[in-house]
Length: 109
Image (cartoon, rainbow, N blue to C red; front, side, top):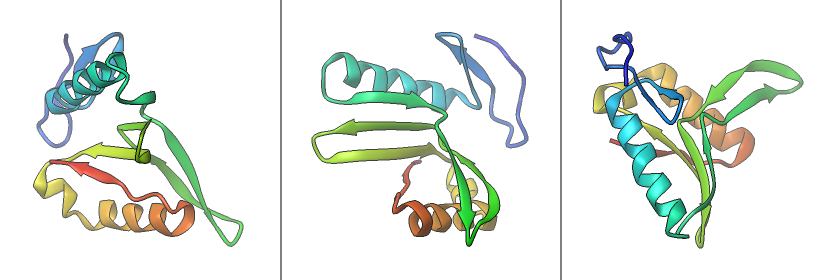
């Protein structure tokens, strides 16, 4: 494990050669890997991203923390602190993901 602090004072952490922005995100990765090994989820992806395009205009790229499938369907998760989850820029990206891709982000607080 290693790394510095990010702009939100979270300690960057590396697990399985994957860099995470916080210890909480790395912990969630461990939980999801356990669920995947148990067969409860499949197709676990770390830091999946989508290009957001509206009316043929590139708006930006959204990178989530995780995506996976289970018996209820596809899921996209972001590990957020309560303060970060309230940020206007994050809320806008979350609404764009719902509007453009019909993806409703699960916030892991």
